[in-house]
Image (cartoon, helix red, strand yellow):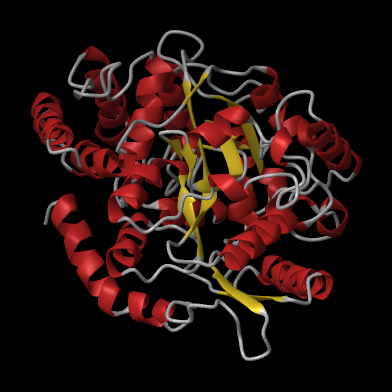
Length: 459
């Protein structure tokens, strides 16, 4: 079954399953947006799952504190899974109109959300009254959720990718933990040494399903100086020597060296579960992947460090940056929109509160000191406050991220129609990681044709 077919089938199944369960939590149908007590009521997703015990406790405590400060507002929390936005699930909710009132989405989701007709234009409500730090939020992040001058979501997270590596496995393989690979040939060499020193371990691991393979293919293309679309965004631009190099690197490690393990078709949680179990030597990711490894998959912070994304013959020429935000479902009342913005401001955009409550997080199994999220503009008051709080309450060895932080790579945003393109590119990634006789030229040609068809159709 092809990836596009899988996404379609998954969407139909989820509309009738998960979608209906979310519908029960929505305030749709109550035109006033008020509950029986006359309070403005909104549903919000991305509540931490039960396995994230401390994060869930923090979220619930924040809801209680927010409602105490705002007695005229009721927050109804919904959990949609450990990832918050699994692309097929998200597509299903959009198709069925079963999102929560305030719903989480990736920066790559704007076009899909606009095409669905499900999101409100919230431009007129964005100001210091609803979000006190709004003027400090990086303008580039606001722009990601803007179309034709209208803002449809509030950014709440920003990241860029580097090379995440297991220091314990590096030491076992005789590698220098303070000098991680800087090029893809060095990654290959290190992966082979790790796999040899620790049988059953993937020296290097990568994604190839659920749109995550295409996501990483794009990041790896950026590292070589390429991309996946032409500059005008109208044509595919990866069926070229750089695209071939990305897939050849992976095929060489997978079948030439047997250094990527036998289990493939990995998605987000699969790879991080393996990493937490000490079964992955290296992978590319953002700083908060170590947070997930520990808080969701029971790994150890002290095992992990980060360096810049590798390049082919030297430093990477670019790295992928992205992030997340919250959209507002069309049809909400003015009071509901303002209530949702106040909640986001409290939980996601106020230094010392919510995700930035570093004093609370310091003694918990939650990292303080990671170089992320980078939400506030350089030189802004909110940035200074957040950085000061982060430094004062660090509970991880920040030196493990120093190479990544001190050697910045130019950040490039995700392509237009990213999730649809990633779904196609999953096929090329899975091909070289599951078939020893995979023809790279044919994989790229097939993906090129499909992406151009998507673009031509305005998908």
